[in-house]
Length: 105
Image 1: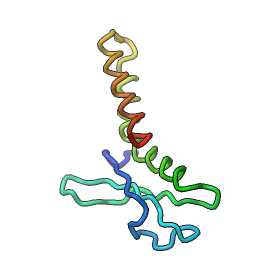
Image 2: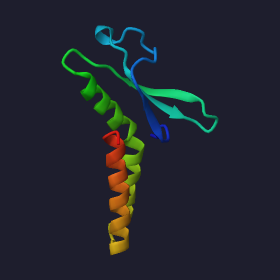
Image 3: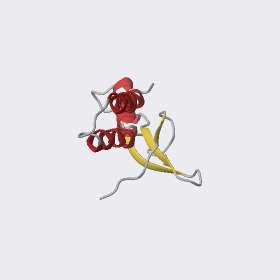
């Protein structure tokens, strides 16, 4: 099984994919931009009754970072037998970039 390639981006609520959303709140939308710059929705994260805007945004950003997180995990797995100081630093950089993307920085 293959997922939609990254990068994925998050749009702020207000894009009317689901006009009312749950409790009338518009959802966060995760998008993929293909090589023609056309946007395709990947997923929507709605603010549920007990989930505030900040938590919904954090969830959407974590989902959008999935392709980068997967790339980082694959890089770590591919280097398991030849970790040198250079490789470790490179892997740390990949991991930090993935964490920043997941946290919306």
